[in-house]
Length: 129
Image (tube, rainbow, N blue to C red; front, side, top):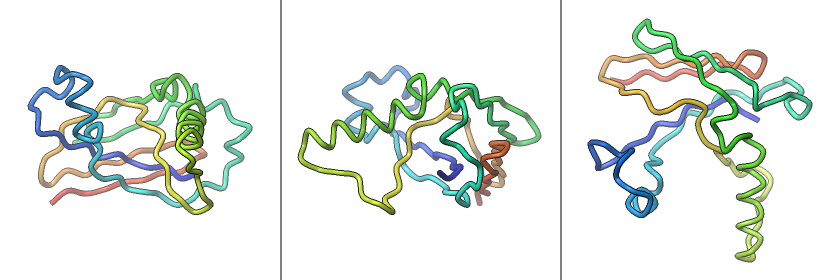
């Protein structure tokens, strides 16, 4: 497991009201993500639903919540594995899967530094030019 930051992008000014079909057509606004170092924590034994990553952007602090990822990040991962199986595909060792975000997207600007502290799971950050 790696802490990560998802960086969405959308052709819609208000992607939240664009509608499901449009968002799916836009790859669910997926664009980029920043992958942090692999965690050394025993994450399998953790209650990921109750994890509360701390986000810092422009001096403001925001609090994420593990339950925002389909109720549990593991549910998202199991759903993906089952969907792929139904298509005759499998997840392979070394492939990177992002299960979703624990906080709604925040607007970023040139010059911003975005950091997330996932507690014992690690930290990850990214700067924007």
